[in-house]
Image 1 (tube, rainbow, N blue to C red):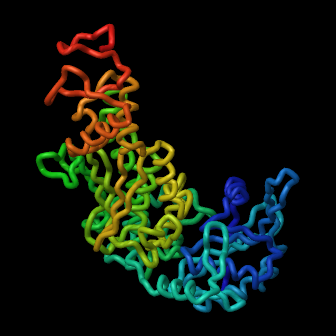
Image 2 (image 1 turned 45 degrees about the vertical axis):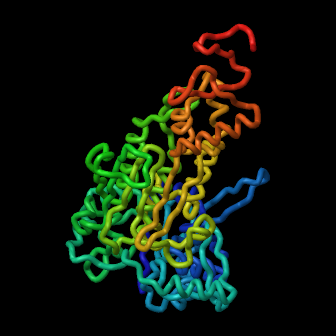
Image 3 (image 1 turned 90 degrees about the vertical axis):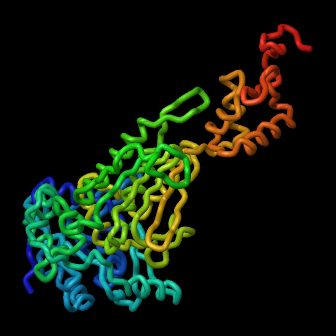
Length: 477
Protein backbone atom coordinates (compact mmCIF):
# COMPACT_ATOMS: atom_id res chain seq x y z
CA UNK A 1 0.00 0.00 0.00
CA UNK A 2 1.30 3.45 -0.97
CA UNK A 3 1.28 6.08 1.76
CA UNK A 4 1.00 9.67 0.55
CA UNK A 5 3.59 12.29 1.51
CA UNK A 6 2.53 15.92 1.73
CA UNK A 7 4.84 18.91 1.64
CA UNK A 8 3.37 21.53 3.97
CA UNK A 9 4.19 25.25 4.06
CA UNK A 10 5.70 27.29 6.91
CA UNK A 11 2.34 28.50 8.23
CA UNK A 12 0.98 24.95 8.38
CA UNK A 13 4.16 23.74 10.09
CA UNK A 14 3.87 26.44 12.77
CA UNK A 15 0.19 25.70 13.32
CA UNK A 16 1.05 22.05 13.79
CA UNK A 17 3.72 22.88 16.39
CA UNK A 18 1.21 25.07 18.25
CA UNK A 19 -1.59 22.49 18.11
CA UNK A 20 -3.45 22.07 21.42
CA UNK A 21 -3.63 18.49 22.62
CA UNK A 22 -7.17 17.54 23.55
CA UNK A 23 -10.11 15.31 22.81
CA UNK A 24 -9.36 15.22 19.06
CA UNK A 25 -5.61 15.85 18.79
CA UNK A 26 -2.39 14.38 20.17
CA UNK A 27 1.32 14.72 19.37
CA UNK A 28 3.94 12.03 20.01
CA UNK A 29 7.70 11.63 19.73
CA UNK A 30 8.92 9.35 16.94
CA UNK A 31 10.58 7.36 19.75
CA UNK A 32 7.22 6.14 21.07
CA UNK A 33 6.93 2.36 21.01
CA UNK A 34 4.22 1.01 18.67
CA UNK A 35 2.55 -0.84 21.55
CA UNK A 36 2.22 2.41 23.54
CA UNK A 37 1.02 4.35 20.50
CA UNK A 38 -1.84 1.87 20.09
CA UNK A 39 -3.32 2.99 23.43
CA UNK A 40 -3.96 6.43 21.95
CA UNK A 41 -5.16 4.88 18.70
CA UNK A 42 -7.61 2.69 20.64
CA UNK A 43 -8.84 5.71 22.63
CA UNK A 44 -9.61 7.79 19.53
CA UNK A 45 -11.31 4.87 17.77
CA UNK A 46 -13.50 4.12 20.78
CA UNK A 47 -14.44 7.78 21.28
CA UNK A 48 -15.09 10.32 18.55
CA UNK A 49 -12.01 9.86 16.37
CA UNK A 50 -9.04 12.20 16.09
CA UNK A 51 -5.60 13.04 14.72
CA UNK A 52 -2.21 11.85 16.00
CA UNK A 53 1.05 13.42 14.81
CA UNK A 54 4.10 11.22 15.47
CA UNK A 55 7.41 13.09 15.15
CA UNK A 56 6.81 16.14 17.35
CA UNK A 57 9.09 16.47 20.38
CA UNK A 58 7.90 18.30 23.49
CA UNK A 59 10.50 19.72 25.88
CA UNK A 60 9.63 21.08 29.32
CA UNK A 61 11.47 24.33 30.11
CA UNK A 62 12.70 25.56 33.50
CA UNK A 63 9.66 27.80 33.96
CA UNK A 64 7.33 24.84 33.52
CA UNK A 65 6.23 25.76 30.02
CA UNK A 66 6.63 23.37 27.12
CA UNK A 67 8.39 23.92 23.81
CA UNK A 68 7.79 21.79 20.74
CA UNK A 69 10.05 21.04 17.84
CA UNK A 70 9.77 19.05 14.63
CA UNK A 71 11.86 15.88 14.92
CA UNK A 72 10.41 13.28 12.60
CA UNK A 73 11.43 9.85 11.32
CA UNK A 74 14.74 9.91 9.44
CA UNK A 75 13.04 8.25 6.48
CA UNK A 76 9.64 6.71 5.82
CA UNK A 77 10.94 3.15 6.33
CA UNK A 78 11.85 4.07 9.92
CA UNK A 79 8.12 4.23 10.68
CA UNK A 80 7.41 0.69 9.42
CA UNK A 81 6.98 -0.74 12.91
CA UNK A 82 4.32 1.84 13.79
CA UNK A 83 2.54 1.41 10.45
CA UNK A 84 2.51 -2.37 10.77
CA UNK A 85 0.94 -2.11 14.24
CA UNK A 86 -1.73 0.22 12.86
CA UNK A 87 -2.56 -2.14 10.00
CA UNK A 88 -2.87 -5.04 12.42
CA UNK A 89 -5.29 -3.00 14.52
CA UNK A 90 -7.28 -1.87 11.46
CA UNK A 91 -6.95 -4.77 8.98
CA UNK A 92 -9.51 -3.29 6.59
CA UNK A 93 -8.27 0.30 7.06
CA UNK A 94 -11.81 1.67 6.84
CA UNK A 95 -11.43 3.93 9.87
CA UNK A 96 -7.75 4.70 9.38
CA UNK A 97 -5.89 7.12 7.14
CA UNK A 98 -2.08 7.39 7.26
CA UNK A 99 0.17 9.93 5.57
CA UNK A 100 3.56 11.62 5.99
CA UNK A 101 4.12 15.34 6.41
CA UNK A 102 7.34 17.06 5.31
CA UNK A 103 8.70 20.60 5.43
CA UNK A 104 11.88 21.72 3.70
CA UNK A 105 13.27 23.66 6.71
CA UNK A 106 13.16 20.78 9.22
CA UNK A 107 14.43 17.22 9.39
CA UNK A 108 12.41 14.06 9.11
CA UNK A 109 8.90 12.91 8.34
CA UNK A 110 5.95 13.34 10.69
CA UNK A 111 3.54 10.40 10.61
CA UNK A 112 -0.04 11.74 10.49
CA UNK A 113 -2.63 9.22 11.71
CA UNK A 114 -6.30 10.08 11.17
CA UNK A 115 -8.77 7.84 12.99
CA UNK A 116 -12.54 7.83 12.62
CA UNK A 117 -14.85 6.59 15.35
CA UNK A 118 -15.33 2.86 14.88
CA UNK A 119 -18.48 0.79 15.13
CA UNK A 120 -16.61 -2.01 16.88
CA UNK A 121 -14.55 -1.82 20.06
CA UNK A 122 -10.85 -1.39 19.28
CA UNK A 123 -8.39 -2.88 21.79
CA UNK A 124 -4.80 -1.84 22.28
CA UNK A 125 -1.96 -4.37 21.99
CA UNK A 126 -2.41 -5.27 25.68
CA UNK A 127 -5.96 -6.44 25.00
CA UNK A 128 -7.50 -3.44 26.79
CA UNK A 129 -9.76 -0.92 25.03
CA UNK A 130 -9.14 2.76 25.76
CA UNK A 131 -11.33 5.86 25.51
CA UNK A 132 -10.48 9.52 25.05
CA UNK A 133 -11.31 11.99 27.83
CA UNK A 134 -9.94 15.44 27.11
CA UNK A 135 -6.22 14.99 26.44
CA UNK A 136 -6.06 11.60 28.18
CA UNK A 137 -6.37 8.04 26.90
CA UNK A 138 -8.01 6.07 29.70
CA UNK A 139 -8.33 2.28 29.96
CA UNK A 140 -11.71 0.57 30.05
CA UNK A 141 -10.74 -2.02 32.61
CA UNK A 142 -13.80 -3.08 34.54
CA UNK A 143 -17.00 -4.91 33.66
CA UNK A 144 -19.35 -1.92 34.00
CA UNK A 145 -17.20 0.35 31.81
CA UNK A 146 -16.88 -2.35 29.16
CA UNK A 147 -20.62 -2.98 29.09
CA UNK A 148 -21.24 0.74 28.77
CA UNK A 149 -18.81 0.96 25.85
CA UNK A 150 -20.46 -2.02 24.17
CA UNK A 151 -23.85 -0.33 24.54
CA UNK A 152 -22.55 2.95 23.11
CA UNK A 153 -20.87 1.23 20.19
CA UNK A 154 -23.98 -0.79 19.30
CA UNK A 155 -25.85 2.29 18.05
CA UNK A 156 -25.57 3.36 14.41
CA UNK A 157 -26.21 7.09 14.34
CA UNK A 158 -28.27 8.77 11.67
CA UNK A 159 -25.39 11.08 10.77
CA UNK A 160 -23.68 8.13 9.08
CA UNK A 161 -26.59 7.51 6.70
CA UNK A 162 -26.14 8.54 3.07
CA UNK A 163 -28.59 10.80 1.26
CA UNK A 164 -29.79 10.47 -2.32
CA UNK A 165 -28.51 13.90 -3.37
CA UNK A 166 -25.59 14.90 -5.65
CA UNK A 167 -22.07 14.95 -4.20
CA UNK A 168 -21.61 18.50 -5.45
CA UNK A 169 -24.05 19.65 -2.77
CA UNK A 170 -21.09 19.42 -0.39
CA UNK A 171 -18.02 19.04 -2.64
CA UNK A 172 -18.67 22.27 -4.56
CA UNK A 173 -20.32 24.36 -1.85
CA UNK A 174 -19.09 27.75 -0.71
CA UNK A 175 -18.75 26.32 2.81
CA UNK A 176 -16.26 23.61 1.79
CA UNK A 177 -14.29 26.02 -0.39
CA UNK A 178 -13.78 28.37 2.55
CA UNK A 179 -13.08 25.53 4.97
CA UNK A 180 -10.59 23.53 2.88
CA UNK A 181 -8.06 26.40 2.75
CA UNK A 182 -7.32 25.81 6.46
CA UNK A 183 -6.89 22.04 6.27
CA UNK A 184 -3.43 20.55 6.97
CA UNK A 185 -2.08 19.40 4.57
CA UNK A 186 -3.59 21.33 1.67
CA UNK A 187 -5.96 19.14 -0.33
CA UNK A 188 -9.01 19.21 -2.58
CA UNK A 189 -12.60 19.03 -1.27
CA UNK A 190 -13.79 15.73 -2.71
CA UNK A 191 -10.79 13.54 -1.69
CA UNK A 192 -10.84 15.08 1.78
CA UNK A 193 -14.59 14.51 2.18
CA UNK A 194 -14.11 10.86 1.17
CA UNK A 195 -11.25 10.37 3.66
CA UNK A 196 -13.44 11.80 6.41
CA UNK A 197 -16.21 9.34 5.38
CA UNK A 198 -18.51 12.25 4.58
CA UNK A 199 -18.97 10.75 1.13
CA UNK A 200 -19.64 7.00 1.16
CA UNK A 201 -20.59 4.75 -1.75
CA UNK A 202 -20.74 7.80 -3.96
CA UNK A 203 -23.27 9.64 -1.76
CA UNK A 204 -22.89 12.38 0.89
CA UNK A 205 -23.71 11.44 4.45
CA UNK A 206 -26.10 13.33 6.72
CA UNK A 207 -23.08 14.65 8.65
CA UNK A 208 -21.49 15.85 5.41
CA UNK A 209 -24.64 17.71 4.38
CA UNK A 210 -25.17 19.25 7.84
CA UNK A 211 -21.57 20.48 7.94
CA UNK A 212 -20.78 21.46 4.36
CA UNK A 213 -23.92 22.08 2.32
CA UNK A 214 -24.69 25.78 1.88
CA UNK A 215 -28.33 24.92 2.59
CA UNK A 216 -28.68 21.52 4.30
CA UNK A 217 -32.40 22.19 4.49
CA UNK A 218 -32.68 21.35 0.77
CA UNK A 219 -31.76 17.72 1.51
CA UNK A 220 -33.16 17.61 5.07
CA UNK A 221 -36.10 20.03 4.92
CA UNK A 222 -37.92 18.93 8.08
CA UNK A 223 -35.02 18.14 10.37
CA UNK A 224 -32.18 20.63 10.11
CA UNK A 225 -33.59 24.09 10.85
CA UNK A 226 -34.00 26.30 13.93
CA UNK A 227 -37.20 28.16 14.79
CA UNK A 228 -37.17 31.17 17.14
CA UNK A 229 -40.39 32.19 18.91
CA UNK A 230 -41.03 35.22 21.13
CA UNK A 231 -43.98 35.13 23.54
CA UNK A 232 -44.84 38.17 25.67
CA UNK A 233 -45.81 36.19 28.73
CA UNK A 234 -44.42 34.37 31.75
CA UNK A 235 -46.99 31.59 31.42
CA UNK A 236 -45.91 27.97 31.11
CA UNK A 237 -47.03 27.95 27.47
CA UNK A 238 -47.19 30.62 24.81
CA UNK A 239 -50.34 31.33 22.80
CA UNK A 240 -51.20 32.96 19.51
CA UNK A 241 -52.39 36.03 21.46
CA UNK A 242 -48.99 36.45 23.17
CA UNK A 243 -46.85 35.71 20.08
CA UNK A 244 -44.85 38.87 19.41
CA UNK A 245 -44.14 38.14 15.73
CA UNK A 246 -44.10 35.28 13.25
CA UNK A 247 -41.52 32.60 14.09
CA UNK A 248 -38.05 33.26 12.67
CA UNK A 249 -36.34 30.46 10.73
CA UNK A 250 -32.56 30.04 10.91
CA UNK A 251 -31.04 27.91 8.14
CA UNK A 252 -27.59 27.21 6.70
CA UNK A 253 -24.76 24.84 7.61
CA UNK A 254 -24.30 23.90 11.27
CA UNK A 255 -21.36 26.30 11.78
CA UNK A 256 -23.17 29.41 10.51
CA UNK A 257 -26.50 28.28 11.94
CA UNK A 258 -25.11 28.31 15.49
CA UNK A 259 -23.70 31.82 15.09
CA UNK A 260 -26.84 33.21 13.45
CA UNK A 261 -29.14 31.67 16.06
CA UNK A 262 -27.09 33.06 18.96
CA UNK A 263 -26.94 36.52 17.35
CA UNK A 264 -30.70 36.65 16.65
CA UNK A 265 -31.62 35.38 20.12
CA UNK A 266 -29.32 37.98 21.72
CA UNK A 267 -30.83 40.74 19.57
CA UNK A 268 -34.39 39.83 20.63
CA UNK A 269 -33.46 39.56 24.31
CA UNK A 270 -31.70 42.94 24.33
CA UNK A 271 -35.00 44.61 23.37
CA UNK A 272 -36.71 43.14 26.46
CA UNK A 273 -36.95 44.84 29.86
CA UNK A 274 -37.88 43.79 33.37
CA UNK A 275 -38.62 45.62 36.59
CA UNK A 276 -35.48 45.63 38.71
CA UNK A 277 -34.26 47.37 41.84
CA UNK A 278 -33.71 50.63 39.95
CA UNK A 279 -36.79 50.51 37.74
CA UNK A 280 -36.99 48.99 34.26
CA UNK A 281 -33.72 47.40 33.19
CA UNK A 282 -32.58 45.52 30.08
CA UNK A 283 -32.62 41.75 30.39
CA UNK A 284 -29.20 40.16 30.12
CA UNK A 285 -28.37 36.50 29.72
CA UNK A 286 -24.70 35.47 29.69
CA UNK A 287 -23.50 35.13 26.09
CA UNK A 288 -21.62 31.96 27.07
CA UNK A 289 -24.84 30.34 28.28
CA UNK A 290 -26.78 31.05 25.09
CA UNK A 291 -23.85 30.06 22.88
CA UNK A 292 -23.05 26.77 24.61
CA UNK A 293 -26.65 25.56 24.91
CA UNK A 294 -27.52 26.44 21.30
CA UNK A 295 -24.28 24.78 20.15
CA UNK A 296 -25.20 21.62 22.06
CA UNK A 297 -28.69 21.63 20.55
CA UNK A 298 -27.28 21.76 17.00
CA UNK A 299 -24.41 19.27 17.24
CA UNK A 300 -26.05 16.70 19.54
CA UNK A 301 -29.63 16.63 18.23
CA UNK A 302 -31.08 13.49 16.69
CA UNK A 303 -31.20 14.29 12.97
CA UNK A 304 -33.43 11.30 12.27
CA UNK A 305 -36.37 13.09 13.92
CA UNK A 306 -38.25 15.34 11.54
CA UNK A 307 -38.53 18.36 13.77
CA UNK A 308 -36.70 21.68 14.04
CA UNK A 309 -34.78 22.91 17.05
CA UNK A 310 -36.95 25.46 18.88
CA UNK A 311 -35.71 28.53 20.76
CA UNK A 312 -38.67 29.99 22.66
CA UNK A 313 -38.16 33.36 24.35
CA UNK A 314 -40.55 34.26 27.19
CA UNK A 315 -40.54 37.35 29.41
CA UNK A 316 -38.66 35.55 32.17
CA UNK A 317 -36.88 32.65 30.49
CA UNK A 318 -35.61 31.06 27.29
CA UNK A 319 -36.39 27.45 26.39
CA UNK A 320 -34.19 25.61 23.88
CA UNK A 321 -35.69 22.35 22.67
CA UNK A 322 -33.53 19.85 20.76
CA UNK A 323 -35.06 16.77 19.05
CA UNK A 324 -34.00 13.40 20.45
CA UNK A 325 -33.44 11.89 23.89
CA UNK A 326 -30.10 12.02 25.69
CA UNK A 327 -27.85 9.40 24.06
CA UNK A 328 -26.56 6.21 25.64
CA UNK A 329 -25.79 6.36 29.34
CA UNK A 330 -26.20 10.14 29.68
CA UNK A 331 -29.02 11.31 31.97
CA UNK A 332 -30.18 14.69 33.25
CA UNK A 333 -28.47 13.81 36.55
CA UNK A 334 -25.00 13.08 35.16
CA UNK A 335 -24.98 15.24 32.03
CA UNK A 336 -22.49 17.74 33.50
CA UNK A 337 -20.05 14.94 34.31
CA UNK A 338 -20.58 12.48 31.45
CA UNK A 339 -20.31 12.86 27.69
CA UNK A 340 -21.38 10.80 24.71
CA UNK A 341 -21.49 12.35 21.27
CA UNK A 342 -24.51 11.08 19.36
CA UNK A 343 -23.04 12.74 16.27
CA UNK A 344 -19.33 12.08 16.74
CA UNK A 345 -18.41 13.06 13.18
CA UNK A 346 -20.23 16.40 13.39
CA UNK A 347 -18.69 17.11 16.79
CA UNK A 348 -15.17 16.25 15.59
CA UNK A 349 -15.19 18.06 12.27
CA UNK A 350 -16.96 21.25 13.36
CA UNK A 351 -14.11 21.53 15.87
CA UNK A 352 -11.78 21.96 12.85
CA UNK A 353 -13.53 25.17 11.71
CA UNK A 354 -11.93 28.54 12.53
CA UNK A 355 -12.98 29.65 16.03
CA UNK A 356 -14.99 26.44 16.51
CA UNK A 357 -18.25 26.72 18.47
CA UNK A 358 -17.32 23.64 20.56
CA UNK A 359 -13.87 24.78 21.75
CA UNK A 360 -13.88 22.82 25.01
CA UNK A 361 -15.34 19.47 24.06
CA UNK A 362 -17.49 18.03 26.84
CA UNK A 363 -17.40 21.31 28.82
CA UNK A 364 -20.14 23.26 27.02
CA UNK A 365 -22.94 22.79 29.55
CA UNK A 366 -20.55 23.29 32.47
CA UNK A 367 -19.54 26.63 30.93
CA UNK A 368 -23.23 27.55 30.50
CA UNK A 369 -24.05 26.76 34.12
CA UNK A 370 -21.00 28.58 35.48
CA UNK A 371 -21.83 31.73 33.49
CA UNK A 372 -25.29 31.84 35.12
CA UNK A 373 -23.78 31.42 38.59
CA UNK A 374 -21.41 34.35 38.02
CA UNK A 375 -24.41 36.63 37.33
CA UNK A 376 -26.18 35.12 40.34
CA UNK A 377 -28.97 33.81 38.17
CA UNK A 378 -30.67 30.46 38.64
CA UNK A 379 -29.02 27.51 36.96
CA UNK A 380 -30.52 26.22 33.70
CA UNK A 381 -32.96 23.35 34.06
CA UNK A 382 -32.69 20.30 31.78
CA UNK A 383 -35.85 18.35 30.99
CA UNK A 384 -35.99 15.13 28.98
CA UNK A 385 -39.22 14.11 27.30
CA UNK A 386 -40.13 11.24 24.98
CA UNK A 387 -38.58 12.76 21.84
CA UNK A 388 -36.64 15.82 22.94
CA UNK A 389 -34.37 17.47 25.47
CA UNK A 390 -35.20 21.00 26.64
CA UNK A 391 -32.97 23.42 28.49
CA UNK A 392 -34.71 26.27 30.33
CA UNK A 393 -32.64 29.36 31.07
CA UNK A 394 -34.32 31.50 33.73
CA UNK A 395 -33.89 35.21 34.26
CA UNK A 396 -34.51 34.82 37.98
CA UNK A 397 -31.97 35.89 40.63
CA UNK A 398 -30.73 33.47 43.25
CA UNK A 399 -31.77 35.94 45.99
CA UNK A 400 -34.87 35.08 48.02
CA UNK A 401 -38.06 37.18 47.59
CA UNK A 402 -37.39 38.73 51.00
CA UNK A 403 -33.88 39.79 49.96
CA UNK A 404 -35.18 41.21 46.69
CA UNK A 405 -37.85 43.28 48.45
CA UNK A 406 -35.32 44.74 50.89
CA UNK A 407 -32.85 45.46 48.07
CA UNK A 408 -35.60 47.30 46.19
CA UNK A 409 -36.31 49.45 49.27
CA UNK A 410 -32.69 50.55 49.36
CA UNK A 411 -33.54 52.79 46.39
CA UNK A 412 -37.30 53.30 46.83
CA UNK A 413 -39.43 54.56 49.72
CA UNK A 414 -42.17 51.94 49.37
CA UNK A 415 -43.24 48.86 47.40
CA UNK A 416 -46.64 47.57 46.30
CA UNK A 417 -47.78 43.97 45.96
CA UNK A 418 -47.91 44.17 42.16
CA UNK A 419 -44.41 45.65 41.86
CA UNK A 420 -43.04 43.05 44.28
CA UNK A 421 -44.61 40.20 42.31
CA UNK A 422 -43.08 41.52 39.09
CA UNK A 423 -39.72 41.88 40.82
CA UNK A 424 -39.69 38.43 42.44
CA UNK A 425 -41.38 36.47 39.67
CA UNK A 426 -44.26 35.46 41.96
CA UNK A 427 -47.68 35.00 40.34
CA UNK A 428 -49.87 34.80 43.45
CA UNK A 429 -50.94 37.99 45.26
CA UNK A 430 -51.47 36.01 48.47
CA UNK A 431 -48.03 34.39 48.25
CA UNK A 432 -46.46 37.84 47.92
CA UNK A 433 -48.54 39.04 50.89
CA UNK A 434 -47.08 36.23 53.00
CA UNK A 435 -43.55 37.44 52.08
CA UNK A 436 -44.48 40.92 53.37
CA UNK A 437 -45.93 39.43 56.57
CA UNK A 438 -42.75 37.44 57.25
CA UNK A 439 -40.72 40.61 56.90
CA UNK A 440 -43.19 42.46 59.13
CA UNK A 441 -42.92 39.81 61.88
CA UNK A 442 -39.14 40.33 61.81
CA UNK A 443 -39.63 44.12 62.22
CA UNK A 444 -38.09 44.73 58.80
CA UNK A 445 -41.27 46.02 57.11
CA UNK A 446 -44.47 47.88 57.93
CA UNK A 447 -47.57 48.96 56.04
CA UNK A 448 -47.45 52.51 54.73
CA UNK A 449 -49.95 54.51 56.79
CA UNK A 450 -52.84 56.07 54.89
CA UNK A 451 -52.72 53.62 52.00
CA UNK A 452 -55.30 50.86 51.90
CA UNK A 453 -56.88 48.37 49.54
CA UNK A 454 -55.42 48.25 46.06
CA UNK A 455 -53.35 51.37 46.85
CA UNK A 456 -51.63 49.84 49.90
CA UNK A 457 -47.84 49.61 50.00
CA UNK A 458 -45.09 48.53 52.38
CA UNK A 459 -41.97 50.35 53.60
CA UNK A 460 -39.10 50.08 56.06
CA UNK A 461 -40.04 50.93 59.70
CA UNK A 462 -37.45 53.72 59.84
CA UNK A 463 -38.91 55.48 56.77
CA UNK A 464 -40.45 58.93 57.32
CA UNK A 465 -44.01 58.35 58.49
CA UNK A 466 -47.09 59.97 56.99
CA UNK A 467 -50.28 61.12 58.64
CA UNK A 468 -53.66 59.80 57.62
CA UNK A 469 -53.80 62.28 54.75
CA UNK A 470 -50.58 60.95 53.28
CA UNK A 471 -48.57 64.02 54.46
CA UNK A 472 -45.09 63.52 55.94
CA UNK A 473 -44.96 63.94 59.73
CA UNK A 474 -41.85 65.47 61.30
CA UNK A 475 -42.47 63.67 64.57
CA UNK A 476 -43.18 60.06 65.46
CA UNK A 477 -46.41 59.31 67.24
